[in-house]
Length: 435
Image (tube, rainbow, N blue to C red; front, side, top):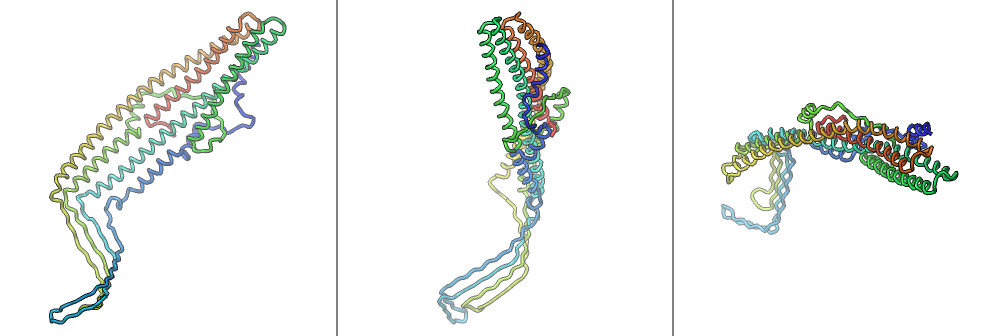
């Protein structure tokens, strides 16, 4: 009997495998697929590409604007003219046609250096888009890994429930045999069957949760939710994380903190733009135009001209109701606001790291404790099953040992999952989560 019990633990890990083996999806495979297919990541990537395209001299206003110009005006009028020599002319429905076309150029050649501030701001906006993309990647990759390892835990729990189901089935057979030969009451057999049914119910519920979580992972991977796959059998936890190193990495790599730093740089550039309004703006204009006109009445009936025109325009704001001073003060407040937000974000990150690290350390300790508990519970169950087989202990004592073992298995797998989730959280906060 004891050899049979030992075999149960070895074979139950295979009970979840389908008749036709499915693809084993590793954590790295899941990350690769998510980076290619996840909708949130793809949306953030498109937004970043738009920010990249925006970094140009043209968007900053450094380059001239060239337009093709065409104007055609027609009129029909009743005219009366008294000329300087005393003659009079009049015409009904006199037609006048004017056509002008050509090329016009406008180029702001000086605006208080605001164009250079705008160009630098566009570069910072690209960096901000990159930080936002990294934030989206980290958030979604973290969720993928959390869901993946949740499936691993549920798979382990299904294996544990399979093992206890096999034990419960053997208990029913043994109780039935004892009842048949008159060594046990029918109550003992009925209790065994009730416990066997309860174990089946628990397995069905766990199987449903396992399947729905796999659907959720497929959704996160941006693929058909009906795609079949298997996951790895164990949860490997990195036990070498060190809090001071994580804090240093968080200050350097955390994309949310980097976004706040970039936000401060953008605020400083916006102040430069506002201050540029104190200086004059100089606009160069040039063009080459063709014009034609026709008139039914007058000294000149037809005329045409073409040629180059060019010039400079200067504009300087002298008074705007003191708005310039107000706008500069508002821009300086935005810089101060950015500094506060950087400090707030840094403190929040360090607090999150500290809390997550304490949880991580606790969960590492729980892994060792629950592993020992599982070993003890398995040995206790083996001894109890042998005693139950020879009829020296009651049914309730056997069921207690059985439940203690299954609960120890579940707690052990849960402890490993929680430690892994703490590891993922620490690496995501510090920006060191491997992609």
